[in-house]
Length: 392
Image (tube, rainbow, N blue to C red; front, side, top):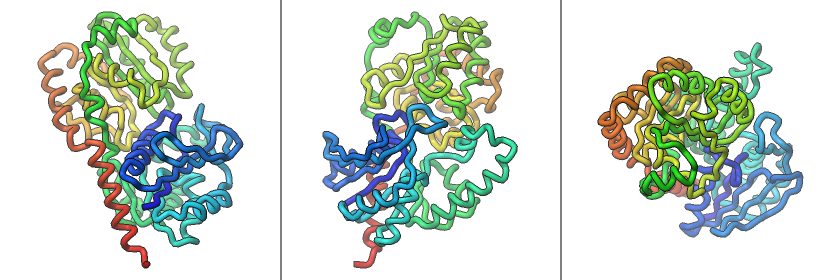
């Protein structure tokens, strides 16, 4: 089968969409499918490259994203997208978002009668978080964006969502096309792997204290201000170290905030790590618990990784996180935005080793159904179903 995947974020970007797109493309290529990925170029020049695993990547000339550091956006790529489709003649197109490349692919696919499926990875709250300067008109802007998004999705053959929460939101907004919930998935073998924490701790020069871990972007929608406010409350009761792993628009501001509040000795900022870095699973293995304060997660790949690492999770009771973190089972939920409640839940875990052990075990048990290969096979099955419906 010939498959084209369109995405605004791809390797070497560090984002959930980039990770899921690479996982999908590599899986399909490994199964013998002819895969072309269409993504923004790191410059204004368009070019083609071949990755080691047999993937063809078409990078379209782009410009810096004014809202997201290190990300790029394309403008009016329809002509080039059309030429690419004529060259590779795909059987199916899979979009990872309804942005510029996705719009071009949907339009050009319609002319050529190529079926299109799309995965939904974001919330409009996430988009609006970057448009803070338009806050007075967020209400009508949200309604307009929702209408445009649903119209776009209803033009596709299938919509794939990573959680039941997201699927219900889309259906309430007017989605009529077929939908299926398929987890983003996680490589269980990679995060199950175990290495004695002492060697990792020494290599990273971390103190011999319990580690509270956050992995993810340091961006507005991740609500890290709640975690930063909670840190002094936790430190008042426990000798503990916080490790925040990730990069983003707010990284420099976060460094200044930590210095201002006298927290630099209690918090280590690891900076961004590539998804395939050998260090990433080792950092999870070092942690005592994992924290995710975001209120906009459509699923959360990093939470899946923490669960696969056998960690108890403290998560916001918001968006799709309660589908992964069951309060009192494999972790604790706190009121979104409430630093006092977040600190109380972290303290509760730090004070009860048996609770941590039991919740970590339940994380391992619960994450099995999110095994990556299972998710990718489900997507491949949708391709087969859709392609078979196309008249010969």
